[in-house]
Length: 102
Image (cartoon, rainbow, N blue to C red; front, top):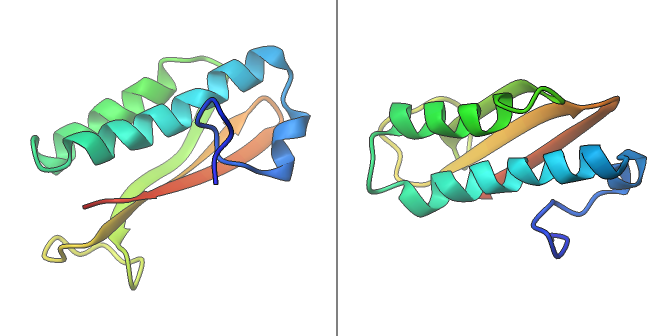
């Protein structure tokens, strides 16, 4: 489930100040950019773009952003169903999110 601004619902969100909350919305924007362009661009380019969307903001510290097999959570180029997972430190709060790809 998501908040109205797209941020994944989490009890951690209350730890975010106004500036951090505004920056945190970039996580869902990056994930939905991946989802909306998944079949239009090479995977490596999409992931690079999505990472840049996050790391361009100094307050966001990307821990990981990976697109993996949706069933095993392992790297596997051959699978059709993937999930993109990310973890980001925003201020003093660790945020996680994911999106299932078509």
